[in-house]
Amino acid sequence: MSSSFIKNIIGFFLLVMIQVLIFNNINLFGYANPMIYIVFVFYYPLRKEKGAFLLLSFLLGLSIDFFSDSGGINAAATLFIAFMRMPLLSSILRKSDFDYQLFDIRGIPFGKALFFIVLMTLSHHFIVFSLDYFSLNEFASIISKTLITSLFSIFLILIGIVLFTKKR
Image 1 (tube, rainbow, N blue to C red):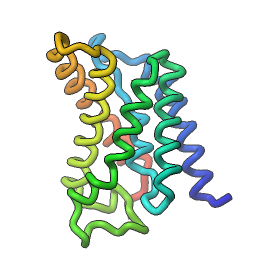
Image 2: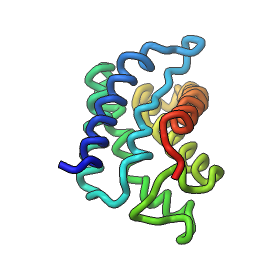
Image 3: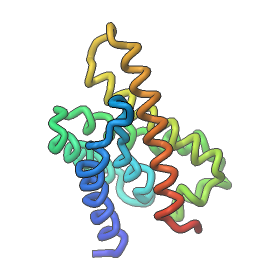
Image 4: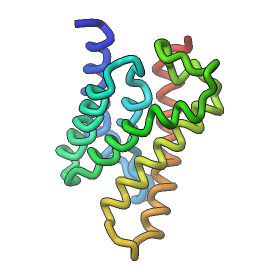
């Protein structure tokens, strides 16, 4: 087994445990619950097989659903952002910014990385809350929870990226 594979598996389990044991128990003002486990989708290597990545992303969301008793909404949202990662990166980055083999979120310009993280997080959270409420009558609640939780999640994800990753 390669060291990259072992790092990905350790990161997978570490993110599940941190999300389930710490962040699922945080409710900012009783309203916002940060979802930082999606950082796995941001950091999974691009050069790896897409099928394995989609399966791991689905299993990540399913693990969170299992511990949160949320019925598959996290699995659906995580699988969606995993599927949309490459098209979104291709549209945000120019060819000169996009090195397929050595891609690292800290290696691209901050504005583009922030835009990518914001779009992915908003998409994920919108899907989670849409499936959670599953009613157009609750559209205002879906939007407000999506925005507030996304702001909190993005803030924590950016802090985590700065503190726990090396800049190349």
